[in-house]
Image 1 (cartoon, helix red, strand yellow):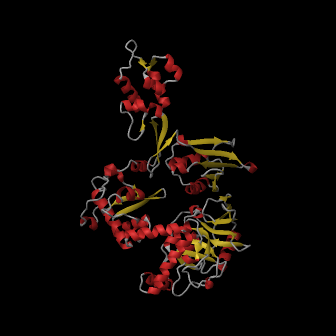
Image 2 (image 1 turned 90 degrees about the vertical axis):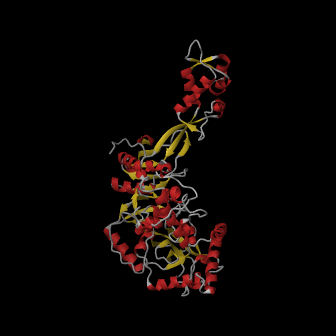
Image 3 (image 1 turned 30 degrees about the horizontal axis):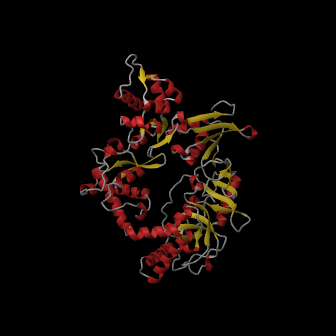
Length: 570
């Protein structure tokens, strides 16, 4: 329902009586739900497929969805994953394999063949009931959906056809994006669930041959129903690597210690810290892995880079810090006992600290960098090749372009002896810089106007460096972020901003911060006819929006403000 951006109206406060009624309804409907009424907000929504309903949120997260579910005609109260994480026993739990969870997050429904059936059998859940879908052995929901079949009718999952759960909402969908975007917590498994996990793991390990075959076939069948090509690719990868989670865990820790001992050592790190977690992994750990070893966090027991780094922080090797929603390494402990006894090896490709990309310095300043550069057009390439003026990157500055033309003039003695300000034009200058009429009439051309003509004929490009991302070159001038202030029905004024994605600004995060800074309701809506979204806030909020974008590193020059409201700025 929320796998794509949805349209929503501004939030409004829920009355205390409605909050009490909601709490009573939730306590009477869901198992072991004991939440007390509090201050909530509600807003109407329309999904990308036309489903309508209400979203009930706290100050930070969406908590409930009230909508019509498949095979029902009445509005039903559905908890979000944020609510289930606080009350993990409120819904019946169905397990599936982590590889299937990835498909659910991508928008697929849960097929019957994807269920994990413990020896004790599935919990009794009737068709049309709400369930929480968790990764095998976990209690934190990754999806919430409605049963498409009665679990008592499921005799076996191997080779089974059809859907088991129609997914309503998942972790990492657009509704989850509208909240705090927390990761699923680690919830202790109770004694009953521990026994079910142990039984399934025993079967998966091969101690019970019959169950082991059924378990493997269940995963294969689930993947066949979801994506035959993906399942084949994953099976082929698994067959060629033969790396266990424990071995990958050891490889990750070894690579980190190698980086700390040889690249990011205490003498040369200096201003490199803090380093983005993604940069540490891609720029340092991957090139410094042991020879003939490929690092893949998904094949480790951690599954995610963030979990691995948190484990290393707990181990004492490093310190972490969250900077604007992105994990960074703020410190490295070179005095750790593991490093004192560690012997570095010869890595397959060592990246020195001084060779680190300039993006780290950009992240420290947290400002987006724009650099105007030029590209040589085809008509001028013979002239530039004549003096070896074409750079390897294909781009140059305006000053470098001037030097190339001066070098060509000097090499071919094109300066007019009677007037040094004039240049004698030859066939390459004519072909690249002059028009046909000028070529037929002129023998000399003013030097300053020739340089000006060169600047005009070069292709203008912009090198854009967003903190945390590699530089990107775009032809033409950089796109602007449009801030439009306009009147709506009832003489109300709203402020809308579009074009955030190019500069790495998260629309949901900006909307959340605007809601607090402006004390006004906000919404994130898709822009019709474009592959982008807009953030809308009530009131004339140009000044506050400009400040928040500046705080995210967006220069004021990139902001295009259009005021159609006719009101004074706040």
